[in-house]
Length: 445
Image (cartoon, rainbow, N blue to C red; front, side, top):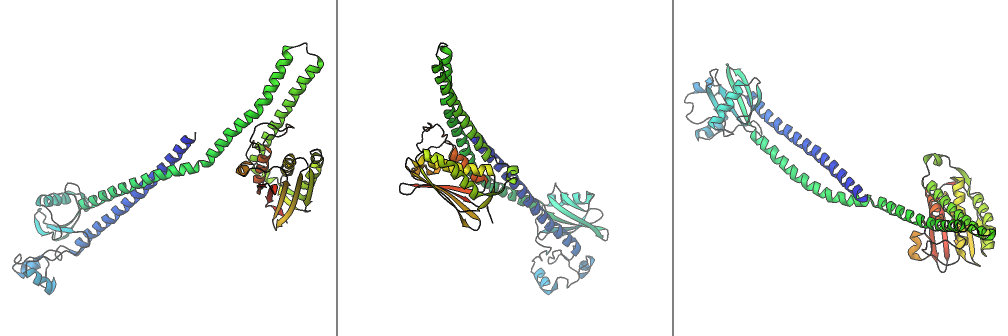
């Protein structure tokens, strides 16, 4: 069960991580595409807006008269003095349309190329013709020509001639593909790391479940063991009674009494198991029903109740209770808590032992109940298990001589404390004896 639960946790974590990475990386790709396409669109519009004439590359000897220049809208000083000197040396004047290289062509109404300006780009003649034909035949003034792999923008505002600007689209695709590959590699690395992290997280997250499962398994085993003995005795007694119908009344009464004793023990065990279940499953409704209780009176009454028990056990019982200390809680459960601790102390104080019960206000909002007893101390390595179900100091699963110990009392006490925002602890040494301390954090002013 735990293995399946861990696999589900790992699967959920990996699925969520994968979806988040896909969404994040897709958003990044879309943003990058929008950014690159925006740059291309700006470059194309800038080229068209500036016009083809100011952008063409002038080579020495290409136009031998100023009249030729004026035909295309040039003035002799258009490029400036430095530009003319560069032209005389046969150099090209670079386009300045932004970061994206743009090629500009002017095409006549008959489809003849009358101006070719591609100083920033290299285009094969076949690609040029394909791109121009695609741009001229397209229904939209801007778009993408798949056969040539270029974006285009056309304008017909120059004496019925068509000016077309082209920008490379393959580089944009390649950049997006490269970015997608890099993202896939990074995402794969992240998923691998998350896979191992999710395994560690699943193990950590299921530790409480594992402990609860182990506790439940142990509880079932211990409860089965506790119930097995009385059931075995009851069955044996009934077999004896049924096998010999001629038993005298005295013999019959002996086996009947034995059966009754074991049945009482089973009833007591089941009652305590029900108490434990009820205290561990305190609902919000019962929490809302908690009311102000006089803890001093409850503790005093519990001490009076166990005076006779302590006397019969040969135990001296002392109490030191500060009066008028009130808390918010459930009267039945708090009374049960105090009685469990006093009863436990009397049982293990030993003959001629001592039990001391104390209740004092330890801070403005806290009261502390202490129950101390002499007797054999609890081994240090077992202190952490004191509040476990069916725990006994001798680690056995046999009942005490009076048959009234089920190993559930302290577990019930711990559960009651948890439901009342109280803290229970225990210390035990050879010199000091054993002391159970309960800190109530809901002291009513």
